[in-house]
Length: 144
Image (tube, rainbow, N blue to C red; front, side):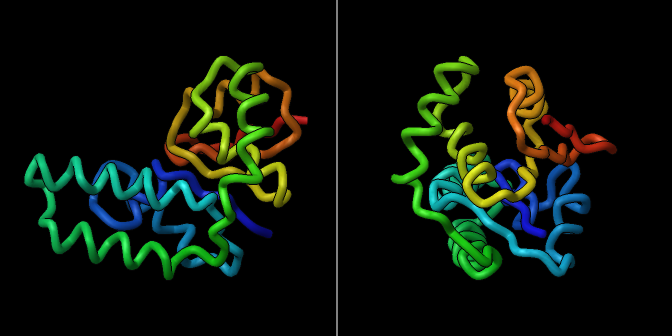
């Protein structure tokens, strides 16, 4: 079993914010944790915002990002995922950068883990054949 983890969950691995304990639960599972390499950029940006709001220090942001590269078992290259992500984004009327995670889950056959309820809802509405687990929800959204 494997999980594609989006940035909304990966940030919670590094800093205390709502549902961080639920996010960290995935770290203890004997599964592959996968993300497209764009996750590093998105998490880096989220950490930058936390530094600007003085929620964490610059050193904590750097250490967190470095730690993240060791947590993921696979960082999938984004470039091959972009064509599918663009098609998904156009069909779903949703940002391409979020659809990269969906394309990655499709490509790897993994379950997508996100804390983005809107994204989960879009996957359901689109009738995609991937499984999505919402961090803040109790049940996964299964689409067939």
